Structure formats: C-alpha cells, structure tokens
Length: 340
Image 1: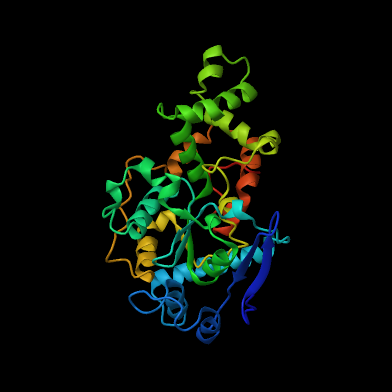
Image 2 (image 1 turned 135 degrees about the vertical axis):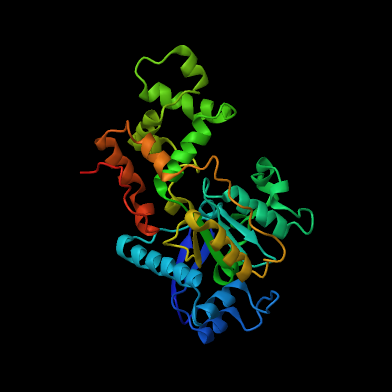
C-alpha cells in the first residue's frame, strides 16, 4: 500500500474484505504529485493526465475560469473541515454514481437533474471507441442504460484505489431547491412517468393526503408539490428506504467530504466548466458539450412559485434537510424562503 507524503489519507472499508483507499490531495506540489503518480503514469495528447495538467495549471497564472474553480474546491475543503466531524467509511454502494473513463483518466460523479444526461452522452462518445460521434444523437434513455458506461463500483479494490489517486475527479452541482423543483416537475407532472407515479406517487398520496380518492391511490399521478415536501421531511421516509437519486442530496450521492473532487462544476456555468474539463482531458477536439435548452429549464423564479404554498414551518424543515448542499457548494439561502 502506498503511503503518500502529502495530502490526507483515510481507509474506507465495508462488509467483508473490501477496502477503498481515499487520498485527499491538498495544495499538492508538482514534485510531490510525481512521487505518487509517477512521472510517466498516463498519457494524453500533452503527455500528462488531466489531473497532472490541473495541478500544473494551479501553479501558473490562472484564467478567470481556473481561479473560480480553484476557489470552489478550496471552499468545499474548508466547509468539509468545519462541518464534518465523523469520517464514515465508504463501500461499493457509495461508488455507484462515479462513472469511469479509462481512456481519458476521468471520474465523473453524476447528479440527476444537473445535466447528467448530456454528460453521460459525452462520456459515451469518449469511451465508445467510435460507436458514438454526436452526443445529442444518443437517445436520453440509452444514456441511462447501466451497461453503456462503467461505474467505479465495478472495479477491484486495487483498481478503485488507483483511479481515485490518479484520475481527474469531477461533479456538477446546482442550486438545491431549483434541482428539487426540477425533479418534482419531471417525475410527478409528466404523464409519461407512470413508473414514478406508481412507485412514489401512490405512497405519497396514501400517507399525506386527507381522504384520497380511489383513482389517485391507484394511479398516483396528481401529487402536489406540497405533498412531495411532506414526504421528503417525514422521518418515516428515510427510515423505510434511501431517497431516490433524483432528490437525494448531492453530498449523499457523491460524498465530497470523503472523495476529493478536483473540479466542482456548476449548472449555472455549465458550458464554460464543461469546456474546461474537456480541455484538461485533451478531448475538446473529440466532442463538444451540448448547448443547454432554456425552454423547459427550472429557474429560481419558477422555484419560488412552487414554494408559495409551503408554510414557513415546512420551508425550514426542508431547508435543514438540504442545508449541507447549500453550504458545501456556496449557494445562498433563497430570498423567497421565510425561515424566521
């Protein structure tokens, strides 16, 4: 086992003999990184891995984008130190959302409702050995088929350790309540999402609607946002099962205080952050990140309207539920909330 001379290290373990080594790099110098990565570890067009390129860029005169991304990374580290006291262990289940691109040495933690469909499409182009050429030509449902991309949880312990140490790790985040409203709109107000209606809608109506009609109990297709909020803050919900990934908190999906992410992209700066990551990977000539459609996007103004009928009591309970995502990724408390 490698004992790094820099960074923070802890051992994550789960049932049986499964061990995952997490290396927490902080302010790593070039010489120190070479001791761990090896001078000839991986090669992209520049002869360096994306992680090595990022580390070298950090020590050069920075562009505005580089400085912004470095600031996010530092703020995340500081917030983790301040608010995280227990270092819980990680197991294979915790790594399911980390997608691996071995060709370009990338690890991407996907977060539903934060452009993850397009990022999966891009990674299918990058890892598809020529099968895919244009991201938007890939149907959305095909982008989410499990076998089309590899998850870090599928690798052996040694392979996991190696990738966590040496690959560029990135994720994209979004204002938590905009993401939540986007998930509600997509899963509970679209007629085609019958699986979600039956799986979650019927349960929500049965538990949180007074005198529900038989048809609503059967179909679950008319859940209100207020009922959805009641379901989320109800302690019984998480006692029964984990949140669905579409409304699970980012810190629970990607574990940013346990895994050190090299780039924290944001939905609000999606295009520039995506270009920067593809440039680090030497892949900007292979694929372009699709332009975001603004016609159906959930905005802050739209999210505010959904909260009109939520009482201050439940607004506060919901904010407390998502509080860590607000803190970790530097999102302000929405002005429309009545928390006092």
